[in-house]
Image (tube, rainbow over all chains, first blue to last red; front, side, top):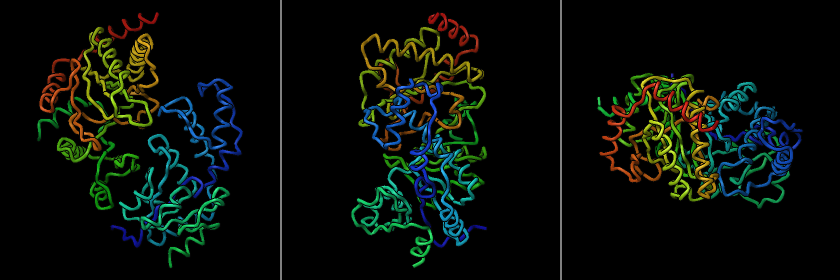
Length: 194
Length: 251
């Protein structure tokens, strides 16, 4: 029988349901020749990644972009799920929400490890989407609730999307918007039922 | 059945038949439910930065594949397929403009690369089918029977090395052109390639055949494609001779 959904929600993965940045910054990555880099470049690139530096190259595919994915993939696998996030996702499913996982990850390469991580952590969802512009995505798919932590905090309101974000240090400087920051998913649970 | 479906199925006969990437301007749950009928599953969806929706669909029954191919030919969307995990009777060099910005522009390095690659293959007795793609060209070669993926990939690696060498000698920066080679066992279920016979979702440009430094019209491209399948497919022996000759170049 077809499931009847009451509402649809889009939920981000990295730094929302897991501790991606903390994992990236606190992991000691070991040099390995299989990366195809010199030791010097390996450490230079790790430093760049852990300090969230931009890729300045004008080229799409380069030594650094390839390496960045390899390191990110390790973090996708080892990042820890937030227990209250897992509980929240299970609550959504049990209450007939249609749940979209909406991530910046390159799912061409990362779909298998992402699905495994979600399964291993008992996180239910209906569909998995890789999306660059989540506000546009939510707008055209008529999803009016988005849990995310990136620039969508600033742009959700003008497009009619309710954005909720897990508060991190980087959000201290952020200008006041209609997006609501939370410390625990129980706060979101309350807001989306209002 | 549309004879073009038969043609496509014959040309791409060794590719995986129950799994596709569908590129479309359509979206929304109603559209998704239509795609996911008959037990088809969505592995993941994607909205690209150029606002194209992509859907990786698995568990596709054969009768649904015919319908999807008709939609491809009718230009409702694009169907992209995945290579067989073990052996294939086609292989493809995918040449892309590697710039982050303005990467559909035809850069001189690209023209030189596709000309050299075509020349090198032809000299070895393998006349390729060159098709215009979004950011460059797909250079296809076809055999009568499947060959182990590793053997195909080794051949392609050497062919790309020879083409990069030509770019370097000419004084071009070869990093400006991204060469991908398929099938590649490391990414066999990761990367799919668009079938001939449709148009790009974003720029609406048909997958024209490129031959003798010019682009054929749509009807002539279909004719060329049919003729290629009939007359330019090579035997395993021809491929092995070409591979031996190429290997000697690097000794």
